[in-house]
Image (cartoon, rainbow, N blue to C red; front, side):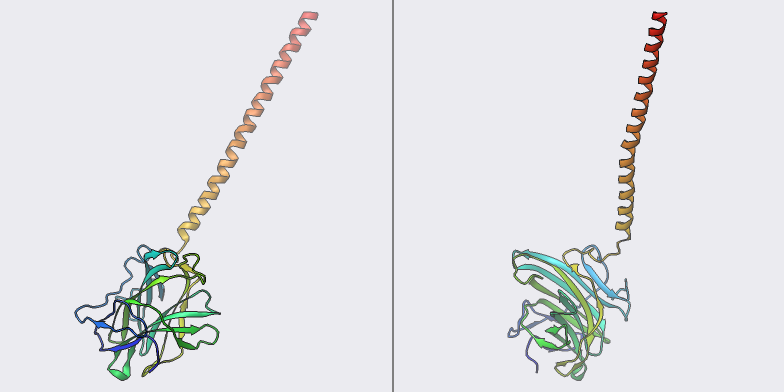
Length: 264
């Protein structure tokens, strides 16, 4: 069996662990379920899905991931709470990376092992973004919950102290998020295939990838208002200047007429 964070449990059985690494022990709970929906997207959690705007609660073809920020411990990082839902005969995964075409991706995997009674599997892997190779790595993951129902895999988990910077001199929650899937053969995870790759997103901002139509309209209106404000004082100034010149000309003509009458 591959080294790393991996555990098999019965299908539909809920898996809960307070905080796990490669050598940690695990606890189980069978009296709860994972209920993932698109409620709160853009408000309390940032959502990534394909097709766009699908709801994992009612759409079997919806590949869905979400993240909500938790507590921040400077300068170590921020707790990020994830949800993942999708259909696969192998595994679904959510990855975090700084650049999808170079470096590495931290890949968090939820799977069903069809060769072992469709049991639930959770694992953490490191993906080489250049050649797509997967390798094990130690990653602390907490609050893991997962289930498999009729081929749909759903899971929730938290990653404490997430920090996108290498030096940890600053707390950064800006990542490229990748949703994807792959096969699971026994305990071996096959090649990862990306289904959706985002632009860099601030995962602590639930509205980071919400359509920007409102913002664009607001910006256009703001530009118009600025132009109008700039034009208005100029117009007022020109009008006042014209009135002043007219008044001075009238006064000059009056003085000349008085001078002519006096000399006559």
